[in-house]
Image (tube, rainbow, N blue to C red; front, side, top):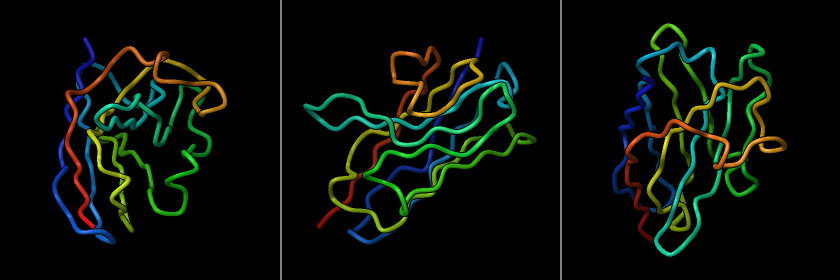
Length: 129
């Protein structure tokens, strides 16, 4: 059983930074396409960033709204996924979820939230104006 536990959320003013972490247990992170998704109240869950895949990696994939501000990374030795979020905007306010699926192809060209079968419990990010 693969389990994902997020941490690192919080409240920051606009322009601030946060770093989210997702610790994975039950299997090695290198075998999975890993992703960060977010959901704001009244809105659908949307993809933020993807990285990994059973093929050995490739380039991270980002939603247009976070390109240049967010960076996804992973530490295979620590079995941990990260999301560094800089220049945060009030529109980034949401619950952020870590997710995993055993797959080779790992980009928003191929993956949506429906493809992911392992999810964390979420961590809240609130950005004030």
